[in-house]
Image 1 (cartoon, rainbow, N blue to C red):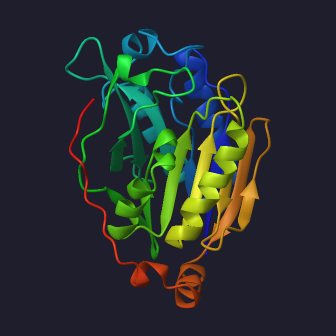
Image 2 (image 1 turned 30 degrees about the horizontal axis):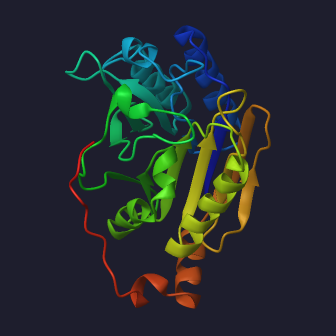
Length: 269
């Protein structure tokens, strides 16, 4: 068994306050025995609307936010996964980046959001660059392999399938799932669907408050919710196991039975 946690909170525009809140949530999860702590998308900085503030607030990989994540990971001996706006070579656009830090504070894996959120009145592509269609980066805890994916990408099942084809047993899914018509229902449905169709665990950490729908959850390969949160900030901890993945895939060998593969379509917006 590996104990993992999803943590949700409402990041604001005060980056110092956000770093402190992240440190508190990691400490709380570690105190409950979690060895992997998954935080939301845009944990470093979130403005009330998508605009140039996401670009001006962006930091490099060696900036204060990643340094703070690494410090928390080292202090508590855990893996930490969180999303932030990363500075790019384009002064008008940032990258929506997700990082996994090891208990030694090193970067274990990274992911840059593939499908930008240009829906429900939001326009990420005006201020962000899409991530490259690169081979998925993974990290391992005991005998479980973790992959990374961000928010809106969960609406595209082929993204998760590529990560599973690369060897993932667990999907870490940080999000800022912006509230809207039926959005909470979409979130719960899509998170469970990605777990069921890929026979994997999905650990989905959403923002709470005005910018996020909350409802962070850990879902097992049969679609059973192992741990979850409602609308309030907090931490939910659940146990995941290699044996559960193997047992579900023995009963439902969907990955072996499928007749299609996923080929990336190299189109940039």
